Image 1 (cartoon, rainbow, N blue to C red):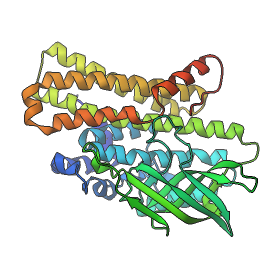
Image 2 (cartoon, one colour; image 1 turned 120 degrees about the horizontal axis):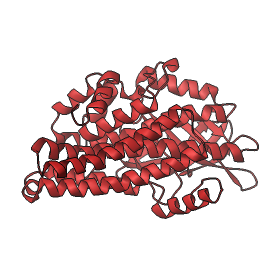
Image 3 (spheres, helix red, strand yellow; image 1 turned 135 degrees about the vertical axis):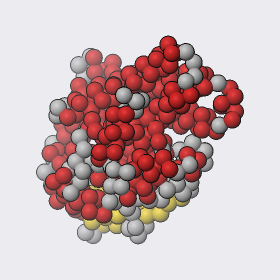
Image 4 (spheres, rainbow, N blue to C red; image 1 turned 135 degrees about the horizontal axis):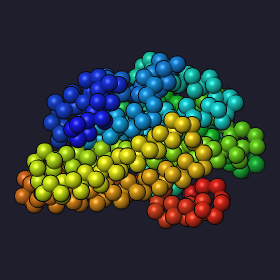
Length: 379
């Protein structure tokens, strides 16, 4: 059994040829602005990974999905991070169906569109803003004849240059001045949607994480999922599903990025056998934690306990990644670090997991509340 073999096998089984094509492209080109990785992902059907077979997709289960995501993270970090939010959006759209009585048509339309056209979904949720809830609204909507006018912006927003569809949480302003949360889906070429350059640092630039701006974008009423009456319980369920899917996909993505450094150590046989084994112990523990969360999802566990488990998983994985990256860089040595920009790149890219919500403070408060018997929720 080779390192990452189960993950690469899953990728080859579900997205045949993608891993080989990515491996043929120089790493610096995969990670550059204008990278071919996203187009290769689309061409090999990666958009359909989590779309159920009933809608024309591949229908991967959660365990298969996290293995594919880890493999892609090791091969092309920017691609894994960019498409994490596509997978999250597909998973969320499928999950909200049972929570909202009027979602069947939009769920079916969007998922069938993704499957048929291999469409990429960008996420306008707050998942890139540490200290904010994942589903916190990033845009505002006000009533207009036949629908809503939506304004606001999301930055960073991965897949901003390649997206076909945009999903977002939206604050719906009522006539009394109050707001309620809704979820919207709209084509990326809708009038009023534009993209502005935002990402300025070098790690993960290939993820296309720029600013998406909405200026009085008209959205028909049927393309905004409004909160149902007596919605407190359903919003809790939606928040829990969002937390679980997000933490799982993000943890798998960055475990893959860190795995690329570990793979370098193993291939170059750096350090002693005991040191290499200790390094594998760190990163494989992270991988098994993510897989354990995926198995809970497969068992139908999307409730409060699983949401708490997803936070334990994410922050445990985050700490394991930090240790593994530092140990791998040290074992590879200073001369390798100087000679190859790949080592510094992977080390920086893997650390970006810390910027995704929730913050460690919010997580800690949520966990304390959880063990006090309160519903898990963080802002």
